[in-house]
Length: 86
Image (cartoon, rainbow, N blue to C red):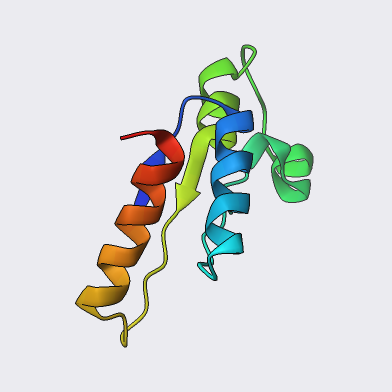
């Protein structure tokens, strides 16, 4: 898995939309254990879990599959850079 950590949830949402508009599927899937049904049932949380929740909001998983070509990788990087102003 390859991922990037963005500044905040708003930035991640904007980037997902930008990539989707270019036909690039980048998703988030990290749900903190304490937020999951099983974690809520079986787990115990100590503290506010602020850092965990922040990372969950900021993590974006990049496309990765066996047939991914160098050209596709360059397209993803270019799209990310253009959205983030890099």
